[in-house]
Image 1 (cartoon, rainbow, N blue to C red):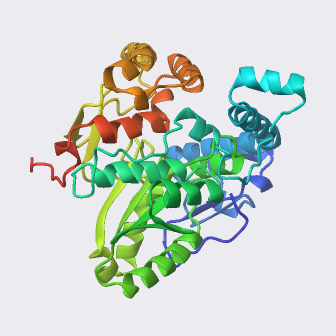
Image 2: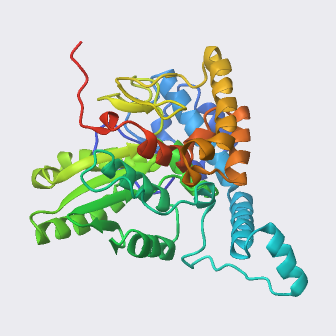
Length: 386
């Protein structure tokens, strides 16, 4: 979502959408042939509207962004109030203590910039300690560390700094985390109440990768300073997609020496892209590690339920959501207190009954997968030739 011109040197097949300049009438016209590239709300190469599927994708993308722009302020206000309420309860020791402090006139108000202020994502899974049973050198270690880094990426700077330095005994470098001889590059996913962030998820435009250059510069300086240092790349949700693209762009820019220092990249729950076609302009490649609802991992070429909207999968997905809700009440008894799920996460599990799969997208299940999943699924692997 921008008004900048597309960087045509980066790709000859480009599309830049500018929903701010789009009227409702023009939105409907997108579905019909007629020179999309000549309209104010899109910058693209000639002939981009020759395919109806491509026009349909552009229509959905812009419609979603327009709707998100419309609810941006109320969404932000609600999010701020919701997160302030969560932190108000936690800062005062729970809802009961909050009421008591109110009656006594001693309410403690949380500071949004403090190391104790947590996002809604952080309240879903409050764990900040690394699993002490998974030590450096363990095949699970980098995956477990990566997920914890991806989880705290949603928090404010003071929270991250305190967690990294005081809890993990590592070095926080603003954009990077330094753990012994390994640098962790973490990309944040979509913030729940940020409409601009959600627009990024729906925007199919080609944008100049500004953040990429800043991260590459800092990473390059650190790698050059120590010839033994390696790095890993990680992220959750949209951050996982960016984590995949980062080494890909390094390869495009022929940063071979940096790629040789890439220890591993571990994207966690990158967005599902079901179709390999010219309309979506995506292509599946490689393998992935798929975890089921009891955290058993296996290496697959394609994850199950490729089409989320398939009516045939509605019943099994709903049954799985029911099981996940039941599991939230018993997992602490089966696996230990550190796997306890709070009331907010259980409400989120209930939401999963209405929108199957949404509750499994939170950080809790990914942390659990890296801790409870099998070591073999996290080792380097290749899919057998067909």
